[in-house]
Length: 139
Length: 139
Length: 78
Length: 78
Image 1 (tube, rainbow over the protein chains, first blue to last red):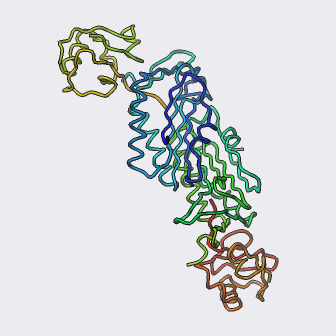
Image 2: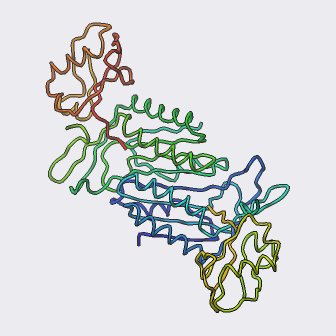
């Protein structure tokens, strides 16, 4: 299989994702790792709470992977996202794209995370020391 | 230190590079891993032999890292390159860029590998079953 | 009809699903009007989408009996 | 003057360094002319640069006694 998609309540591990994607057919592998930041707009972040509409999220992730395979000459695409409670330094998302040549790997990986953030039904609540809010939900 | 540069005759390991770069200050980490392909222009690759003018190579790598720190808001830059004899599947180069936001990480990582391939004095000889040549050396 | 609620919608409405009366083969546009009438708190959101059977719907999408319908507030994964 | 050779240059010239007679404070442009006269095999290369003390030089760069000078064939790392 050339597509690996996962939504998990467990901690994500980077190395197994890279091992899955790497091969002697792919000269370039681009990896994007999202990390929970310890502050946002100057406010200290205590934790993030992620939830998902899982069946639809996997469906939208599949569309991103299929689109990439049509648009770029890439060999492997991995998208893993974690849900539940995460603290600063934890990894909510890992994307790996392996291609014969690096341009496709970079462009497809960037496309994957940019599109993911626009279409995949996963929501995060930022919890600060003095309040909390669902990101992007309110004007 | 926010810059980690290395030229090594030993195998490169990805996870320690990522561990070095990740932090709760950096919401986005982009990693580029170069891999020795098993074929080039349809010819089967037996091995690659990398050599370097090491002092100058480290000097040019330093310039790339310094340029990136001036051009993009990034927190950490790692560039490791392996020299010696590599076989298909081996990793000649790892670049990691960590930034508060992903756009800078992606752009700086791409800039790093593109510039690296133009300026850093490292040379590779491709060895095929039926011949060998220094890449890009001859018209 | 039962409608799934997630994230900010779940919190605004206080439940993981809500019930709206809707004829069979009605359009999503009508559902949105009903939702905003019945749950005016939804106007607190910067926007929301409707998904039918796990696909983003538009105002003309027809909702059939047995379809899985969800309110999708602005996503923020990654 | 001793000049370092790498990669394809090392292979073409058969050694990791070569010797060229050069006055003190001579320019890189003169060195290149000398090199191409003394080692016409260098014309097999698609191009080459000269580095002085680990920095890419141009034709006007002055080479002083004790400088480390190298012939840099097209690079191909990564």
